[in-house]
Image (cartoon, rainbow, N blue to C red):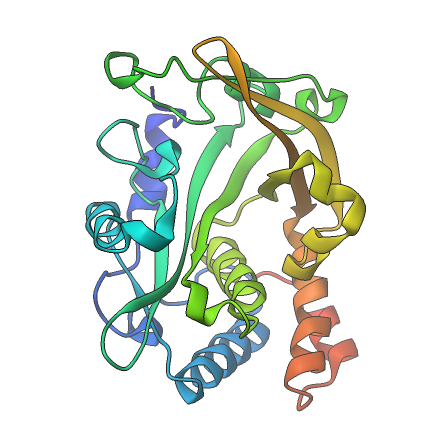
Length: 271
């Protein structure tokens, strides 16, 4: 089941990054403040390279292959990013980090939701969140959301999920940097109104999700499998403008060579 209108689908497809090439060669800045985004992308790429990690966009078919090669450390594969069972809109992204030996150490995925003619709640409750095809839905996966704000949430939405970090890289704080990188890519490639993520409901009270830039959450997105509860998720969200203001602060904290106040003002402009 596709959640994309034809016009939005075609527009995003035109800006899909190239796969398998160095990160900074894969795409160009389309939306958002080019100064702030360019400095962040360059700084993040250099920082990760200094730590032995090379960034590349990969295809979802390659993601499946890599997950199978790392099955001992991967855990369950998120069906909403599995092209074998789900409809993944063209324009969706998978960003991966590889070590000097070429082994994958971290990855994160993103897909767009077109909620311009219906609400995010309508998309979720109609099965468009996972978009698992009926003929492949052997586990009878269903999703529902009852948060009032989900019925108000509209526009082109960017959802980030399926974060995986290899066990021997989990002490390096890669997850936080990757969250900022992928959301920055969504801002400049998709120009979304809101950026979304999800965590287990029990994590919300810890504030852990704020490490990735999100400053709002709503409860609760329920996932069932074969009629039984499988996950109780909180949807994390922020507007694109909120993210850009936070990116300026984040950049100043980890690479203090930029005036955060100037960058924040720049962050409210469009290229």
